[in-house]
Image (cartoon, rainbow, N blue to C red; front, side, top):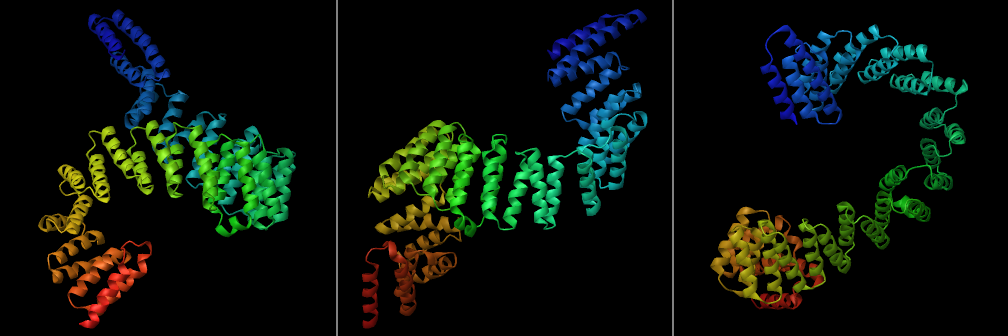
Length: 571
């Protein structure tokens, strides 16, 4: 469409002789195309409109409307410098046009030039002293720049022209509070209230002010008065609830929130927002002491907003935080089933099952999630983890094979999948299949440390190809010299090669980086110390290993250590 209009106008320009009559025709044609450009702008076709306007201006450079709409287009396209030039050109051609100056002021505001915006609005007020919106704009601008005296003076002008109303009263109140004129600010609200214009908003502000001064009874009076005017006015209800909470009247606090949650006139988003904040700020002691009342609140919220995703999530998080993951999972599940195409809803349910270690449910949920979101490898990865916890090792292999099928070109996915498959085959005693999987992983990335470490360690356990194991393990500690697991593998291979003196410093380094938390690392270090004749130090590390071996990570560790100790006595 853009090219059609441009070619048509250019053809018109080129074909018309340069005579006065034809110049008039050209101007009329440009005006016709200007109408088309305006229509395109109104339809949201900004680029097309801007292209036509460029051509119009080339044929009629004195067309102020064309400059104006070109500026509007560039404003929408975020070309602020071009838009400013075009607005200024339009104003130069038509200096009395209000809208040209008003839109230029908008541009100045968007570009953060408050001084230029204020200057332009002040000039507009001189030319159009009856336009109220200009005064309101200046009130906001003066307040933003901290010129509170001018803000008050402008509010005075507005009230002279249109009278006092809730908007001007609240604006004056806020400014006076910023100026630390507390008594004057309260007087403004009270005067408006006493003039016979009772407002829930003004009364709630008075309640807030009294509450900030610890004048609880007076605050409650204002909130209650506001609620007689509008029983569902949220600031008054929540202000009243907070007042009861501050003074420790928890029965009234929960009762007020019950009214808030049951009100059909309050939208679910507002209810959920408050309950979410309540969940975040409550401490464990409060949650324990008032669990029954809190449960009642959340269940009321759920009853009133049974299909609101945010309410379901908020309540689920509350139950998780109060150590009732069963109810939390139930709500996360309900949310995921209500909104199966909402990734966040599904992912939250999956993560909740993972945290609560519900492995069977997690495996099933991940399978369903991956079917719904086939581009999210994380769901299959988490299913693999769940199946591993269930000791369904063949399912783990299938999960990782499925991952590689789903992402045939993703090298990282294949790398991690082959690594996991190799680990599982090793656990199943299928050494050849394990090493085959590791070899495939290393073809993708020859320096992938997790595979190199496991491959090297398993080779060392079998006592085979220690040179190959050494070379692989060496790469891992070069890449991650502070990884205690990799340091342990490398040092253990050195031990198996009879290089205990070389192994010892690597074990010492492993101890610094968390090796003391591993039964295997402690046992290995003790063996090296034992081989070096440092029996007392070996005993210390074996004692540490025995204390941590509650899960029988190393079978018959106690018997082995006892045997070593007997041998020491003989020596």
